Image (cartoon, rainbow over all chains, first blue to last red; front, side):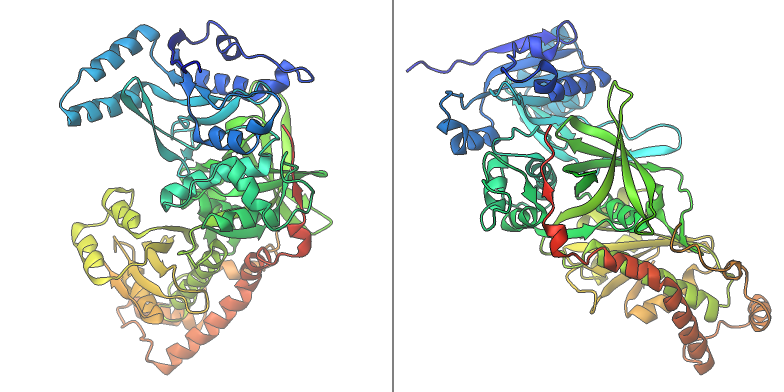
Amino acid sequence: MAQSRQQISFVSFGDRSLADVLALDVPPFTSKAEAHRQLEYVEGYVRDLDCHSLVVEDHYIDRDHMEDHSVFYSKSLQPYPNACRRVHFFSCDSAVLKRELKRLRSTAPPEQFRTESAEFSKRFYLGFTVIKPLPGCPVGRTILRCFAADADKGYLRNFSCACDCRAHLLGVPLSIRGLAFQQQDLGVSACATTALWSALQRARELEEGAAATPAQITMRASQFTLPFGRPMPSEGLSLDQMCQAVHSLGYAPNLYRADTFDVSRGLLYSAVLSGISPVLIIERGDLWHAVAVAGMKVRRPHVRNLVYPLMDDRAGDLAALYIHDDRYGPYLKADIRRKTDNRRKKDRLLLEIKLRNSSVIERWVLSHLLIPLHPKVRLSFGELQRAAIRLVREIHAHRQSILAARETVTSWDCWIGKSHSYVESLILGENRAPESLIATLCTTVPFSRYLGIVRVEADDLDPVDFLLDTTSTERNLHCLALVRPATSRPQTRDLTELLALRYGCSVIG
Amino acid sequence: MDIFDSEPKEYYMAIRSKAARRNAAVAAGAATERLSDPKAQERLTRALARWESRTKPLVEAVRSSEHLTQKDFAIRINTKA
């Protein structure tokens, strides 16, 4: 039996198309545009990131493809190989790249090697894409660097749903932050499977859960019910099947119908702010599609969005989402619009997807949101929203009746995060707290692993964080503490003390 | 039309009459009324009831997004590339 051979090639980016560099065939019954659409998207994306060179690994074992091959492709008449190719993208040219890799391999001691490899990655590494030996759907696991945080004037990008990933090339560890993407192959996966696969990559990073390949997701989804016939080749999944798949992998599928614009936007904003990638079910006519959210674009500074007089939901800053759409590619921008639905007398959330290098705009209506949460988090995003609304109305009621203060617009933000991440944000984040506050918080308040955080602010109230115990339920919701890093505004002290009394918790700060 | 557009403008304006007198007292340095004062309790209860009824549609809108039926679960998601 012939031994597998490895070959590493350094190629300048831009001289030829990726498809030509990789010598990809187009299968019969498929056009080049259809077969290589995602590959061309990836090429365009890395070009925008200023890619100058690529490195092709000829023999790469990808776990996801290996599983798909084992379950499906190994049983085909066509002898598909089980190995893939992997292409790395760099923003330096090939000569610099070779020199740097050689220098890093000569670096000792180990700490310096790791530090310099990390710096090299930060400076030059743009990510990788796995090329499967499937001519009609070659784009496998792809992790590319996200866009920079600074967007157009007045906007900021937030990619909390991205993961820290590692790759190794010629002995050098490379690090990249992004959310994994791959195209559907219509064998083991359709759009629902690949969207779940992407979203669960992030869920797995938060809480070490089972890794799931597309084949495993489809099999778990089809374990108990087959509403559309055969599981593979995949004919698509129902919401029920998607929930089953998420549940079988150890996560709780929080499912919401996107009935109204404000609620849908609030749930999306909270989920992405919490660093959880929701799966969006979107509809257009009689088409239903699933995409995973990788990040969002928000207005900065905050623009007031009154969902009710004197009540300002900061989710109103959400302007766009960055989605992984397996029909096109990763980090596709979807602008958020309000769509008036006269029949239902409710406004729905519309996603406007402008395709890259095209004047075509696709308009999809958000139908459902599926948010995979760890089962430790019993407080859902819907319950957190309701808790936030109740908190804000309590603030208004106390301000008006006890303090006799002037009515002021009060804004809120809510998200779920790990307790240690919250404490870190007090040390390193925008609303830095004094060291003494952090010490008091950590030594006097017992934390649940995940906190529900509601941050409220008004002209007369400094930003105050209500920390909710996510192991409690809505009926017996437990407030762990009120954290007030600053007390410069007139009603902060009085309001926080009154509310701490009301919720039976201590005020920290 | 947003479901929250129906409230009259009065809710935007500052409270008048008795509350204005209380404001003046507070501004003059009078002590903040404490929760133990029965009258303050009563005012708080009424204010909470008022805010609860006003924000009920908001809370219900969030709740209704969680009410799923068989029709939701039967959707087939299979758009192809």
